[in-house]
Length: 304
Image 1 (cartoon, rainbow, N blue to C red):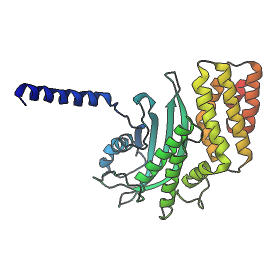
Image 2: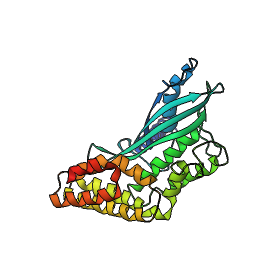
Image 3: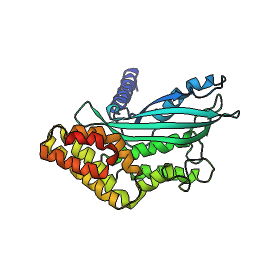
C-alpha cells in the first residue's frame, strides 16, 4: 500500500468514527433533583462539613442511571428534596425529616404537573465527615437507601403517568429496599410501627386493590392533562373518569395514604382544570371531589 492510499484509509476511519459519535444521541439521566438542607435546629458548631451535602446528594441522584429508558433533557423528572435536620449525636447519627416533591412536563406545553408530594418525618442516618456516597442496593444504609427508595417511588409514579401500571418495576425496586431495611432496626421502614410510612406506601402501591388508582394516574395525566391543550372539554372528561376510578379504588381499601399523597399534590390543579368548565361539569366535579377528598373541601367549593 502506498502512502497516499494509506493516508486516505486513515482519514476515512477518522471520518467514520466522528460520524458514529455524532449519530449517537447523548442520553440524559432521569431525574433533575434540587436539594436544600435546614440545620438551624442543630446547636453543634462542628458541622460545617454539611455545607457540601446538598451538592453531593444532587450529584448522587442526578448522575445515576436509574432506568434503561432514554430521557431527553426536557423530559427529566423535576425533584425537590427539603431536608430538615432535627438532632445529631456525637457519632454523627442524625434525626431528620424530608419533604419530597416531584413533577413532570405536560405534553405540548411549557408547564409541569406535580406527581408526588410527601413529608417523611421519621428518618435516621449516619453521615461522617469526608464520607463518599455510593450506590449499593445490596446493603442498607440509612442515608442512601432512603434516597434510593424515593427515587424509585418517584420513577414509579412517573412511568404510571405515561402507561397503565408502567411503574411496577420501580415500585418493586422500592419494595426490595424496604425488605432490606426491615432486617435492621432503622425507624420508618416497618409496617408494624406506623401505617403511614415507607413500608405502607410501597405495600399499597404494589397491592392489586390499588390498581384502579394507578390506572387513574395514567388516565388523569396522559389522557387528561396531556390532551387538555388541544381539547379542554375532552381532557376534563378524562380527568373526571380518573377521579371516578379513584373513588372506586377507595371503596376497596381502608388505607388512605396514596390517596392523600395524590390529592395533596393535585387539589389546586384539579380546581384550575374545572374552573372554566360549564356549570354542570363544575358541579359534577365538585360533588365527586367532596366525597373522595374532604380535606380540601374549602378549595373545591370554588367549583360550586
